[in-house]
Length: 114
Length: 111
Image: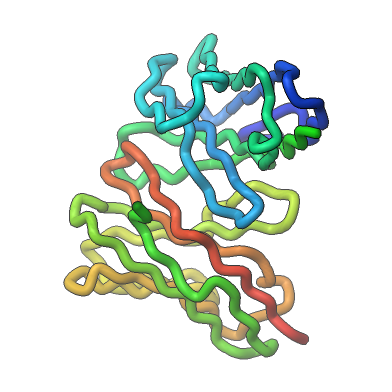
């Protein structure tokens, strides 16, 4: 049973479109994250939610909007997609503001904008 | 600003050899240092982690060495195997609030 699952695995779309990525975790964690991994494999945090409350919002274009309906789900909606948005997006979860609680990642969504 | 610096960017090791990846940080508030292993098409997976109150942690062939005064930590993979070929990320966290990742090391183990 997958701990952190995200859908879809692949997403190919054209510039200007709007798309969403869904994430669910069954670990009972209270904190969820979105990370972006670029072509050089650098992992950059985008957002973090703790119990449905936004706690980290890095410098990300406001075309990106996270939504957390409950603490087990964190979705990412992207408006007006641009070529530079092409990357792999990872959802992750942890036991939040608890020391020594590692991140658990999903398997990623590869977004390609053409 | 890169909170955690990682080197080398890539590493090629013969089967049976020792792979060593180094990381350094500046923020003394960091109190948890995990290493992640990522295979192509997969998400990073926790490999091993250390707290700053110990200088070394070993799990099987994987060892973390931690030098608090130098603000450096490293991953040693003993008896490296082709199946260890992956990208490795070090990370640092401040009380679980946020994780900062190194830039990754692509390890290739040659049979």
